[in-house]
Image (tube, rainbow, N blue to C red; front, side):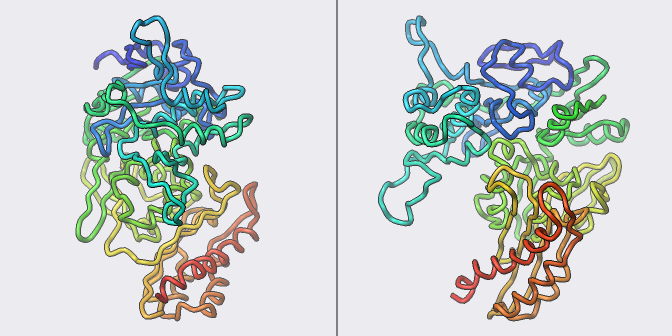
Length: 489
């Protein structure tokens, strides 16, 4: 194994003597790069965001914004990171610093007040600035082009959804985002996109009797898990990173699977979609480009762009959480999981995967290699997320619908639920009550009562059991209101 190191703002820095659990945030601050801030230590405020060079979708490399507070620095061994300090450049004489276009617009448009959140905003904004397929949009007063969440420069405000500001207010920040132009041809970070991203580096980083591992192949990884079943598996670390920061959890052995080639493939076949378990949600969203409409509805409501840049389907399903947003959607899509161990693979329907609270059929040493979604897809779909905040929040209730409606009759219904039982569940009684019935208000109101009784809702700090039950019934009424006109036409 080579010496563990990371390239930060163009300079190589050894990771030693950082502990195996040390986050990128803490490592950067120890290097004197204190623009990167800790706000929440949970990936919810974005004050810590930095840019990482990752394999691109439209170009060989994308500059991706991630929460530095969640990612272990050892996970970026051999990788390239840019912080807010690294965006500015020296002028031709080398005597003065020239602000990056994003920094310039934030300054002149009053996008910073106390300044604590500003470096994080700037890094997230820079990631969108360098998005290869960003392009200017036609500006007129037509309803087709009216979109408050996209600027005339093609800037997508959702790229800032994981960044919070408590004093400036968002209008000047939005103004700055909508004012930036396109990267100049001489911009070094724009030019960097044309070269391949750094390859993952096999890593065995040991410090203070704790070890961080990364293997080159899935087979090597599976053998580690077979031989050392106490090894913790991480991908984007958007879940475990919170445990490390907030609950001071430590693992003696950690192995990263986020860059395994076998877990990062996406295939579209005649009879199914197969999505690698280690592809990030952002990568899946951009690769599929709306080909699975129910997933296209899920992604904007799943946490924030910063989280989606690291989170994976494998991680969301691997935790077995009853409140993850992807399981209800994948249940409605009748997805199956491809599980791998050193002896081979098996395919398990997602409906049979969860066995209890944070318990699954996954055996010791098995990994989720891929998610399979069968084709053809149902044409009437919806994902309803009920939460205290519209975005970047945990669901109180999540409901996913996939219906086949022909001639005004519900021929097939699949409904996935989250947050209403110890596991994500299919609303099988509601599905049976809908199938064969007219898609009509009388039917929907009757069946909504059945849906309200699905699961075993409980009272907690997010919602009461009564509220959850009411929201289940309302979700079917909402779907009917949303789709009736389209179905009749």
